[in-house]
Image (tube, rainbow, N blue to C red):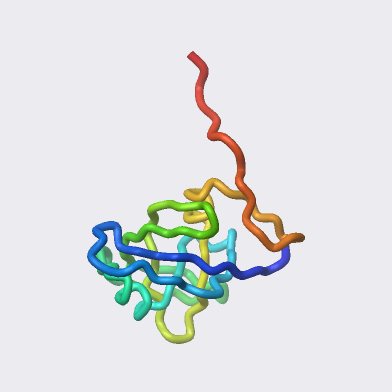
Length: 124
């Protein structure tokens, strides 16, 4: 699948900070979590809710990072999700949990997010 980037807006779930634009997040359906630089999350008023959460990197290395809660918006899509406070050297990623919350599918050829349609539900 081709790699592409998107710009997103992020804000605190408590509205204690500003909505900020986060540029050039790699759309990565293979990464569970969304990773945003910690200084940008702090600027948006997002606080650490979980400390030293372990993550396995693509090369097998285990690292720990802090996690907070945020509202993320990209194009017409919006969701609430956990976000990782990325450190220097970490990639900026839009992960699969956020993509599922957006209810989108990836169009790698056109390099864009596409609405997945209605949610399935049980009939009465």
